[in-house]
Length: 190
Image 1 (cartoon, rainbow, N blue to C red):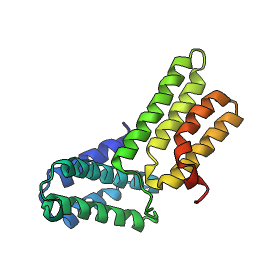
Image 2: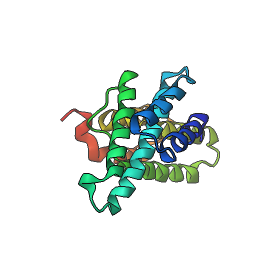
Image 3: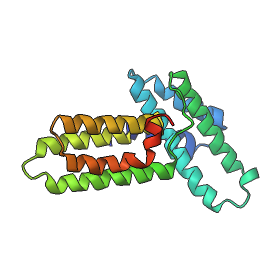
Image 4: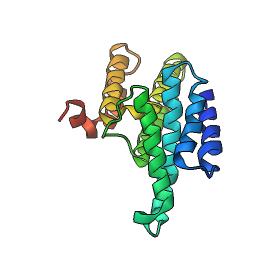
């Protein structure tokens, strides 16, 4: 876990999870922390971690919610996500309609972890290649905010780049492409 993740999780706990302030005030507290970061990518990552954590708790609550239409907890989560996404828009990030759900992120993370396990078994004498692939996969896990189409395009591009560069074999690239295949229509804009 890097420093941005640690700061975001602490901020989430302090400003959202254990804070009884209204949604706008909670998000204003989160926004205040953005001034600590020079990098736009760090700001985006910081906000996305908050969105993911709010969404994760929201999805858990929805499973047991007795009155989803009039639930204050649901309204709070929806408002928090809205205000946090508005901050991403203020940073120039276009919010896509094809964003990953929490369950889809978990599924993609699991698929990427399975591929890492396969590489881990094959890495004997190939530590540099394994480290490169590990770095690429960790980066992909942080880029879900791009939306499904752009994320899958990036994954496909990384696969082609690693195959062409000889980092991975065609066999391994086919395993990686299995993640992209169900969403191929997204890649070509259909």
